[in-house]
Length: 162
Image 1 (tube, rainbow, N blue to C red):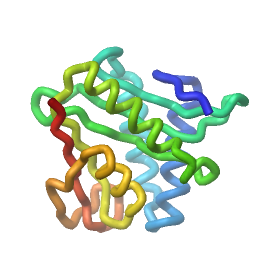
Image 2 (image 1 turned 90 degrees about the vertical axis):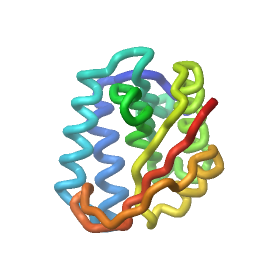
Image 3 (image 1 turned 45 degrees about the vertical axis):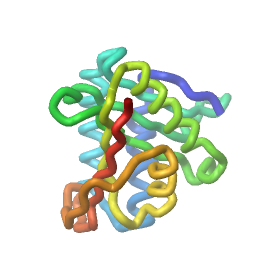
């Protein structure tokens, strides 16, 4: 599996597909979630600024995309760098790809001088939480919410880097 930095043709659709199929199957998210992922990821790619933002895509040798992670630094001064669109395909889950993607994003944050990183998730994703905590993220906020189209226990994890 190769990890590439930056936009690749088709990545918006494939990253959206990975999110939509996984979250539909595991928690019942539907069209509102898929549309939110597609719209926000598309806007991120249009506004992408090298050095401020990062998008890593995990691809097999045949070009098939199996994972992604992004760092959105556009609002860093106000709220920190935002870790987003972190997912791996069913085929690649559990083989260390998630750790590799997260390491690439964390290395970028260190090199960019980002001292605060945050992400939003929800409490049903135990494997992801374990990975976040392994990398130093801590739960900083929990609330009921429906930002993804279905009410869940939303969680904000933060990491302060020095």
